Image (tube, rainbow, N blue to C red; front, side):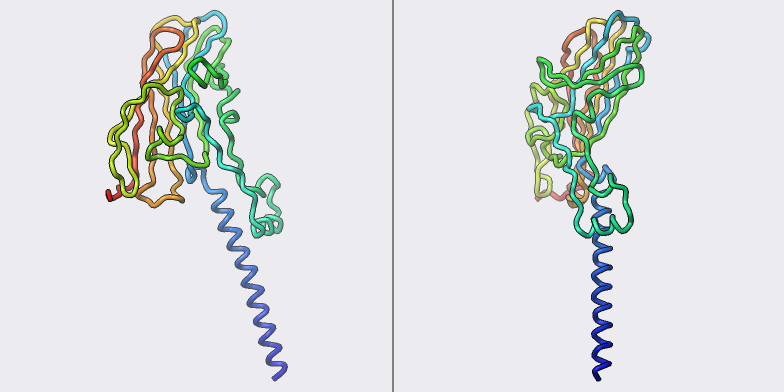
Length: 269
């Protein structure tokens, strides 16, 4: 009887210990999968700038082009998602599996300066963030005597933004922002959305070193919410877009249109 009880206790300890090990393993895998999921599975934005009609122009001295930059209507840059410290279970499994040191914490997400400032693009352009009389803007500078068109894109992850009313609720749009159109909303499930596409004014800048035909600007900012945090009917995006053909130099006003898209239709309440 004594031997039988010892055997049962031994089996029970093995089962409990094995269960703990398996639980640690599964928890670590689950959290690593969540932390290191694709950037598109977070609150993320895609930003693109195309300036055409520059290629082949002969200029003297530096040339500067400036365009709207992603920021709130008050000019605040987004807050990147914070880098997470791992749980004990993750630390243990990372040590056992000898993960490289740079992967033992959660992924690091860049801030606005790291994403937009001092980047080189084809054609000899270098980016810079500048505070102008209109507010912060993204600039492109070159010392080349023969210009090339500008093509620039970036994506970034934020800690949060609101796709239902991004203009009023501190989400990234194309700053500077002036003369926002009247905004009306309609019910959308438990929330509201814009009844129509709002518009607002922003600015581009063209330096004096310019000759030739008008310049075409196409600027997009697409913001998607985190599909892991929202029921499917509230997953979606909003898009800020500028399409403008510009003649002249200095600060030039352009119109921005903001549209919304929800991937699954919510039932109005």
